[in-house]
Length: 93
Image (spheres, rainbow, N blue to C red):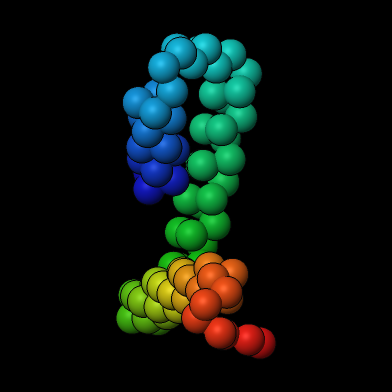
């Protein structure tokens, strides 16, 4: 459910950003996407069954922290890359 909502948001943003109309996906692509989403949900349910509610919640929080740390590292790396390209700042490696 979360993955399909995220895909719908991305498609909506692409539709807003581009001036041309996106073509409709064929039914086979939609069926494959729905099958993949159902497999992912079944896998999450299986993991939830084995490890329990508390550990599943902790894993979710840890994954959010890892994603946030990677995003922060990417942003900081990009900012430093841009700063190093400005010659009068005198920043070196």
